[in-house]
Amino acid sequence: GEDVEQSLFLSVREGDSSVINCTYTDSSSTYLYWYKQEPGAGLQLLTYIFSNMDMKQDQRLTVLLNKKDKHLSLRIADTQTGDSAIYFCAERDGTSYDKVIFGPGTSLSVIP
Amino acid sequence: NAGVTQTPKFQVLKTGQSMTLQCAQDMNHNSMYWYRQDPGMGLRLIYYSASEGTTDKGEVPNGYNVSRLNKREFSLRLESAAPSQTSVYFCASSDTLDQGGGQYFGPGTRLTVL
Image (cartoon, rainbow over all chains, first blue to last red; front, side, top):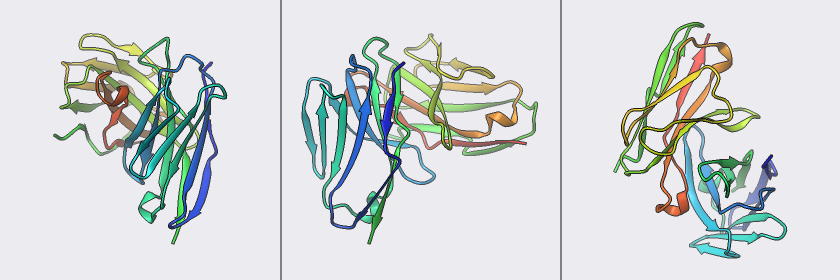
């Protein structure tokens, strides 16, 4: 079945760039998403990319998609302590539109 | 615009008790979802509703029922709670014309079953 994988932990220094990686298996994915979850809160949609795009930039966030390798990344420029959270990658199934597969989440720690 | 709201925020039940988790969205979205989030298990889909009047099972539907009361509201019912249903429950909504169909999540209900 479809699967989404992410590394579980990432630690960066404040001011550096963070890169969170994700791989997925469904070659018919239509949209891919990044969500942020802060402690005790729900998931917040950060950004999305359509599967025919390679890159999308939104202020400090850059999403790169390599469809051939089924690899998605989220780069956060000038990482701040407020960026400490869990980041989830997700993909929308191309055959069953309402099916969204989430990765396990990457816990980002920003060291002051 | 409140987005997605959920009630209650916290709940403690005894085994065998029933309860209904309420969810409402004010974004005029067609699709609504119920997930549970457990440590080490990630986010798992319980039920979803692609439009008013329709509901479908997700990955872990056993022990739950849902009602799509109208376009705004989607409730989740536990008929006879079990300790295995201790979890954080999230409701979400989405629409194909909004942010690529990305989901908007509520703040969650933290449920403990003793």
